[in-house]
Image (cartoon, rainbow, N blue to C red; front, top):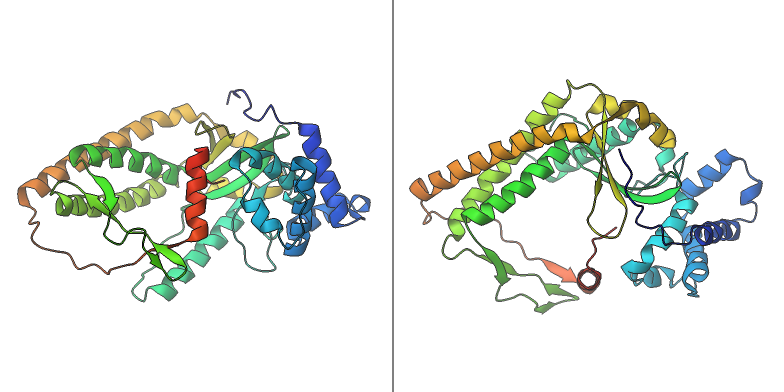
Length: 359
């Protein structure tokens, strides 16, 4: 793909590299006497206390913020988004593995690191097994589902040509579903205009949190909207499964697409299927992707066809609901109370202030 202007070119790369080197030396004075393999293992498996020590050094070196390991997490969480990129870049250099300093921004089991999964498939399949076991524990009637590549996207950070990037790893089926969902949700808003309004309990204090109570106002079409959305969820599930099954037959391929959401460099890596994941190692990510690269533009016809299909489906179902649906029949639903902690509300306020998503 053709590279566009790098969004973080204004950052002082040498200052970031120096801060990372200093942090690693402070974490262990012998770090630079180790072999490359030993250094990588240290970065991938360091405990929480060492991570906090590194964070303290990075805050001091890059933002002139002095703090102790006991308070560093709170201070780090309060850093404005505009200052996070240089911190995240430096931190990647202290935690990433392989040729691209790749870092998986996901929770892992204790005593487990990315080095325990040689290929992307190894990790994704283990995650699938974990998800299946969890669902079977939580839902006694869960029947299980077959494995398909990257049903759940991963958040990743890595270096591309020496530059820091945020990234999303996903499958072609899941990415297609996102395109379908985004377009379909807009179609639903056009078919049944609606908005969220505060419920009677919204914002009320309860224990250590605040009740999150938003209601949908669809000008009397609330029941019809709920029915259309319920059908829409089933449609998406069916299309995702159908696309996953179809994509199994595709040759291994990696599609790359940059999202121009904000001032951050964010690149999507879209994997065609399971066979693609089996050919890509975490420690040689970009070099393994290179021979599998395919043109993202070739997917535009696929997306357009799926969006047209979904739009027709929604229009037909909306017409059917308006003609035949009995809004007096109320579906039984389990009531849920959502209580937001103070920290979550503060994070939401911080996003509004900086107009940037979580990273």
